[in-house]
Amino acid sequence: MQRRKFLRNSSAAGLAVSSIFNIIPATNAKAGSPNNNSSSPFDEITIDALQQAMQTGKYSSRSITEMYLQQIAAIDKSGPALNAVIELNPDALAIADQMDAERRSGKLRGPMHGIPVLVKDNINTGDKMMTTAGASALEGNYAAKDAFIIQQLRASGAVVLGKTNLSEWANFRSTHSCSGWSSRGGQTKCPYILNRNPSGSSAGSGTAVAANLCVVAIGTETDGSVVSPSAVNGIVGIKPTVGLLSRNGIIPISATQDTAGPIARTVKDAAILLGVLTGVDEEDPVTKNSMGKMQKDYTVFLDANALQSKRIGIEKSFLNGNTAIVALYKEAIDVLKKQGATIIEIELKKATSDLGDPEFIVLQYEFKDGVNKYLSTANAKVKSLQEVIDFNKANENTAMPFFKQEILEMCRAKGDLNSSEYKEALNKTLSSRLIIDDLITDNKLDAICGVTNGLACCIDLINGDYDTGFSFSTPAAIAGYPHITVPMGIVHSLPLGLSFMGTAYSEAKLIPLAYSYEQAGRKRKAPTFLPDSQ
Image (tube, rainbow, N blue to C red; front, side):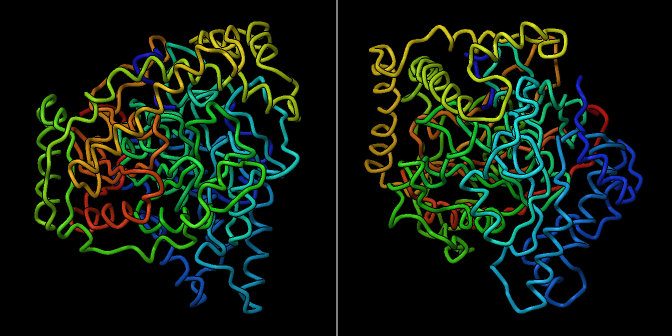
């Protein structure tokens, strides 16, 4: 999750990485060169463009997969050394070959057929890759089967290219954590300015998409971990309604707030990936609530004129603060107006300002419960939260060389989900749903917008992350409501995102609004891999 006010090197490459890199020759790339990635024909490419290239025979799934492996070798493992990819799938080229064979035989599974995808390393893949949440304590955890969303991904014809690094335990380990760092994967960098933090906890997925190491990736969010790394890395992220995507097979933090979500460079690509991941899963009962509400194709809702005659609530508190960010926010509001939207100032942050403490209580209880359940059946050498804590203490020099495990220990001290403290905190946080629903109903709003988060902070492994203001992830996170971020522009060479959020299962309504803004604003700019702030 994104590190918030209550939360205050090992090798990134396994055998699978080195073995594939021995097959695919690397190109050269140098940090600080604006065009170091320009030699790739896949820079800023979309799913549609890749499909057209495969249809005409210009490229195959194999050649596309090989090209992304070259990009990872040149930019992630050398050159700028972004460190976004924690492990590569040794079967990636074989999967690509299978998809090419199916295409030649006339079988096309859909828009993701043959498209390589990177997956966050807290999501089970029942293959030759580990699932570790970045924790050295979980090294050797080879999942017995795919998470449900990975089953859906494979069924769509996608190529599972590899796993991305993340903030260890999805940034729920220490009060002084540095986002994007894990004991297994080391520190991931922001591709815009390399000494800046790519934000957590889906740091690797965000960096990989931004740096064109893949066309799309999957992240997970409890509070901010899809939208924050997307905004910080100048890309699109969709945190769906909790229950739209199955959480089965994902290392958990919170049964109330956890969800996976697509990360892409365009709204359309994010919408494509979202659709293929949906589905009712008997092993995640919450997904049953999405029956009749989910869509398998969210692209049918894309409309460049969708903002016309819509009423958009804009977070009033963001009209004050860092002058450059506020100016960019006002420019975004002007774009909404020019697209025909009516703007209404609202104060959602103020209305939900007292929910942070009960949220943290809920997360501690649910993390303890969920992790113990996950580890009890996993193939990891540790079988409980207590054993994780013990492992980290016994291997402190490598498992905890910078920050410790205060949050894990706080969680261990909590009781079970029958605790009155837990139930009271849960009821308090879920009041956010009524707050948001009433705000939308009373003001007749189609969506609520705000600055997704502030500028990327500097990487600081000693002191941890620091607040740069403007965070807007919490209201939608604690309510379990959908939240989309779209590139809003750049300040001091660092991207910012504009958020669109709404009530439960309003993805089909929010996606066209985000698309309309994206098409009118065109604020996405590729990273330039600057070594430090200019």
